[in-house]
Image (cartoon, rainbow, N blue to C red; front, top):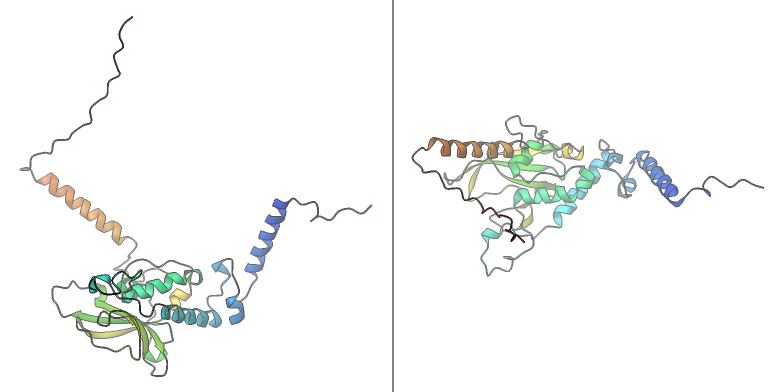
Length: 268
């Protein structure tokens, strides 16, 4: 009599566990040697060979195609009138919002979820500054400028705008959301004049750091992760000091809820 095979005596639960283990091993041993391997489903971001040229070009092409999906999305609701057809649009994207949305759509390839801050935050996340001649499609162009209205608060590094570089035939094409236009557009040139700020300098940044799966601030002055906690802590401390030092103000009466006593039972 022949002995049954090992797989025949396994329970359904053990078979499922064995299949999962084999899938993990196959995903670990998978190497991305071309575009065909990049489009195949992956079970873990660790399976991506982030330093390969094929993966770099793949993510950059996805970055551009994803940004083009948002062409025509309005800039901001506060810029529109109630009778405007885009006033009740489901989505609004300013310059940094477009970059943020594209990164979040591609977070399974990038390996992180980018934060909610503006273009100054995104500028601090990309330490690799490059020349314009070395720009590749998907890289970011940051605009350092001075606001014309002196009442407008300055931003970190004076970063007033950001756009996504395309290149194309002109070599200067870009995708961005400009307040003067009012929605996301594809532009023949990233160069333009703003009515709100005057340009000081262009900063060309490579997104290779994001493609390598790294998302952290490289600016020692702006850690970003702890800034919100520090601001909240400082506000609470100032409120405490203002209430403790003001002796002329009468203390507020604290109302306590009435105490419920147990019902009195009549004696038999």
